[in-house]
Image 1 (cartoon, rainbow, N blue to C red):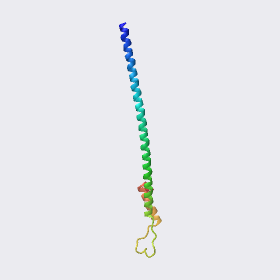
Image 2 (image 1 turned 60 degrees about the vertical axis):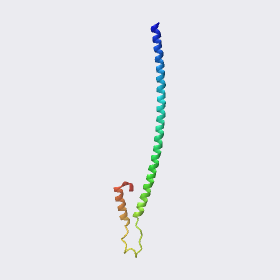
Image 3 (image 1 turned 45 degrees about the vertical axis):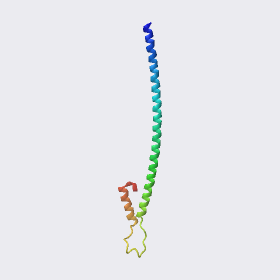
Length: 109
């Protein structure tokens, strides 16, 4: 009988220990899921910020390209000023410059 009560007591301790471990595992799983959701939210926010930054930079590049092209456009000169100033670049010259610039830096393509 003594042996049986000892085994019964050990079995009860084992059951209590299993229940305790199940609770701990459940708590850790819940914590892990919460942390995973938090990381997904942070990732989503970071993605949105990155996309907004990319859009800003693309807009800046478009603006710079436009400004750059405006600088390359020849200004018309009056006939009396043409002797004092160097000749304006022709459209063929500008196209050549744009082609070379695009080859060197594809951003200006």
